[in-house]
Image (cartoon, rainbow, N blue to C red; front, top):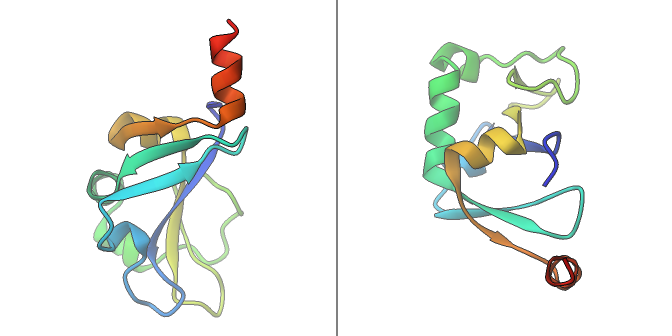
Amino acid sequence: MQRHDPILLEYTNVLGRPGWVRGKAHIIAQRVTSGDDFVLLDRVKLQSHLETVFTRDELDNPDRDGRKGALRRVLGRRDRRDAFAWFSLEEACKEAACGVLVSKETEKRMLSL
């Protein structure tokens, strides 16, 4: 996992309904962009972290003119009703990690060390 791997937390989807971070899943598998590995994250802890970092007003009124990929800001797209925030995967893991799934290639590299 690289420190700069981003994770998008969808608070409200494009229809204005609860996004996946407020869904029914217990575990979210987030692919690590620097490879074929996955980090398993506790969805409830992610939601709690998101709702701790941002106020209800920020979550209900996202910045629709914000820069793509801006970390730790609530963003939304024009002509959509979504609200989401980018966090570093490192921060998400610190708050909500509960496991890791590694690819066969990563496993081979680790065993050869």
